[in-house]
Image 1 (cartoon, helix red, strand yellow):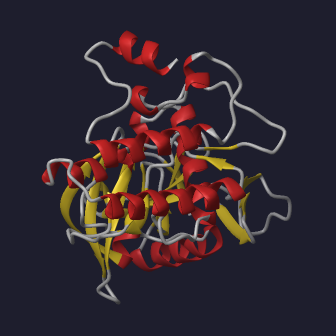
Image 2 (cartoon, one colour):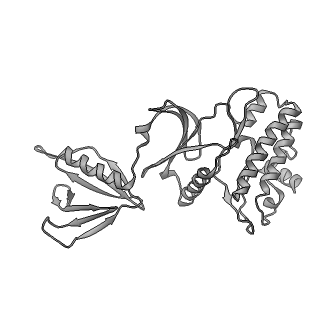
Image 3 (cartoon, one colour):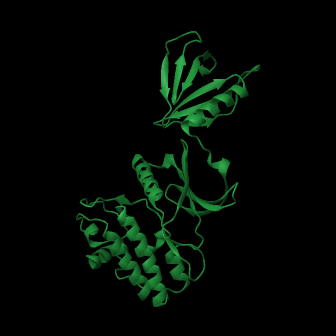
Length: 314
């Protein structure tokens, strides 16, 4: 393969791929390698061909190393480029979102990007894809997102959204989830003028309670349970619900507690507002607030002023 010494000067090196390590030699006969690059955590990017001069075309691809550090490699023909890219893709476990799914319309907007509907090309299954741009995310944001992914990986419950697939490159993270078509719980209530039968309120509260029991059995506290983070499976009157958005969730051990000031004011537990140590039980407070809303059509703690909501809660 070739590296650019300057914009117009090329320098040829010999490379050897052993496992996930790419060794560099000055020439074919040299026994001692000049350098080595570990490909763990590396992304690969297909670059467009370049004209070096009127008679010379070169075919580049880039490896994006941790810390978003790119290195570009050049081949003198397409076949060699494909051979190298295929070999590297295999060892780094590369998969391309667009080889498997076809994007459709935008169905939502998040803090770091869009939520789009998509269809699996082989099965025809409809899914929702959360698309996040890394350039808009801080290091802490990326860590929180990875925590959400790890929590979703372990969740297999009928009232918790299912994670189906994950794709990542140096620019974006794609989270593939089941497609829920009924909108959020607040919209569901709004369409019905917040009037539900006691039996229906009981059913929805029970579904939430079983999902929380499941989460808490794994030590997971959701920490932002509210109607906007609960989606209805369909538009049907008797639709089931599913808990979503685990971006603020945390695994809290039996003898551990948290002081993070997370949650949404009308639904957050008093100990969070008082900045006292708390555990998974803060989700039960939120469940109680939601159940109250389902039965009474109003929130137990509500006001135009945030300070008054906090005063009522405490």
